Amino acid sequence: MLVLVVVTGHMSNGATRWLRVGILNLQPTELARLTAVIFLAWWLKRRPPAELGFWRGVAPTLALVGGVAGLILLQPNLSSAGLLGAVGFIMVFLAGGSLLYLAAPLAAAGAAGILALATHPYMMERLETFSRFVFSGTLDARGSGWQLDQSLIAIGSGGWLGRGLGGGLQKYLFLPEAHTDFIFSILAEELGFFGSSFLLILFGLLVWRGMRASARALDPFTYLLSAGLTLQLGLYAIVNLAVATGLAPTTGLPLPFVSYGGSALLVNLTAAGLLYRVSAVNEAEEALARRRWSRENP
Image 1 (cartoon, helix red, strand yellow):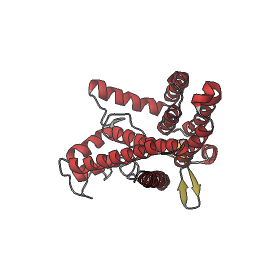
Image 2 (cartoon, rainbow, N blue to C red; image 1 turned 120 degrees about the vertical axis):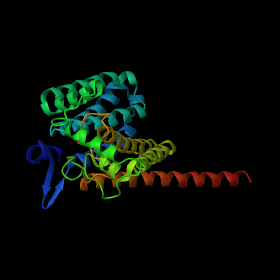
Image 3 (cartoon, rainbow, N blue to C red; image 1 turned 90 degrees about the vertical axis):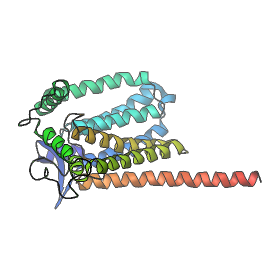
Image 4 (tube, one colour; image 1 turned 135 degrees about the horizontal axis):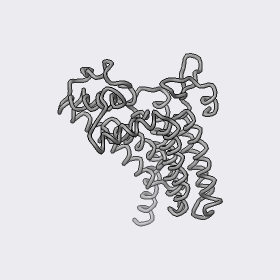
């Protein structure tokens, strides 16, 4: 599907990321990031890097991740490709891969990112806009910095309690992509500091519960699966929030469970269901172990 979307996909805003299936628009990148984590968890269980070394354990795994990330990069979608690569690297490390083994592939991934920036002027423009804002405090509010400027206006105008749900003004043609990439800015404007802080707490709880389920997993597959899914949800949320608040260059990543989008919502709900299943199995196993222990030690 990633190959198909590059060849015959629907283009919007300069990127080819969607497949039209009847009246539906499907984004294969969202499906790919879920299936990649599931496959990597299965693969790393069968081929542990700590036992097979670099060439038989680490290199084939990262080649698979790089292939999928490369297809996503062709759309072009640097942010999604980069996050998929980051999740893959972390999963290899959690499976026992040495940091020394990961150094060279990490450098290669960095070189690929630099090449993508050099060959796509709009990506470089976003990076330059962000750099000027961070280091000099200047922002081209009528040009490349329009989105960030309107995002900060929305967040700042929300105050402590916000304008009220549905009462925001920046979504009325001021802030582009207010329903997807910059949905947090609208929530901060309408719900204020307390409402947006509550959202951050919910994401923190989700990541904590996901990593807790991973730490309690009883076999390598569920351990890596829950860790990979949790990291993916957490990284997507962190990057989206960083973009909306001016802590990262503008990207096209949605905010999980909040941004509009059918493919992303379907994938995120599937990931949440898998995490819940792992957590439920852990609880059942722990309850059975406690029962056995109480019988053996009356």
